[in-house]
Length: 144
Image (spheres, helix red, strand yellow):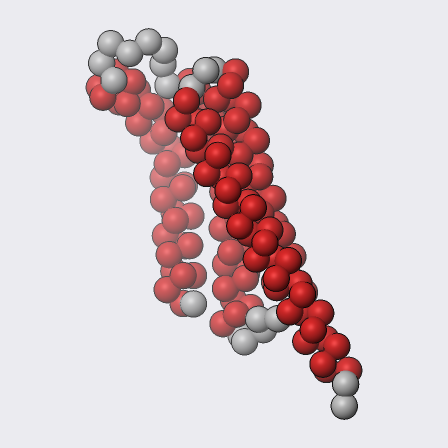
C-alpha cells in the first residue's frame, strides 16, 4: 500500500513535469520521429491538456483509497465512492480522447479512448463488488 502511495506521488510529479514539457515532446514526435508526416502535435496537446484534470482527480482518489486501505478501512462506503470517481475519471479521459481523436482524425487517441473506457468498465465492476461487500458487512454488524 505504501509503495502504491509513493508511486502515485511520483506519477503526480511526472504529470506536473509533463504539463511543462508536453509542447516540446509533441514537436519532437511530429518533426523528429514522424519525419514528413502530415499534421502537427495539436491533437496530442489538446487531448493531453484536457485530460490532465482527470488524471490528477484519479490520482487523488487512488491515494485516498490507498490511505483507507492502509488504515484497515477496506469495506467502507468511502472506498466505493473513490472507486466511482476513479471510474468517472477514466470515462472522462475516454470521452475527451474519443472526441479529439475523431475531430482531428488521430488514431492513437482513439486507441487511448478504448483503453480508458475498458479501465472504466473494470473499475465499475470492482466498485459494484465492493459495494456488495460493504452492504454484507453492514448487515453482519447489525446481527448479534
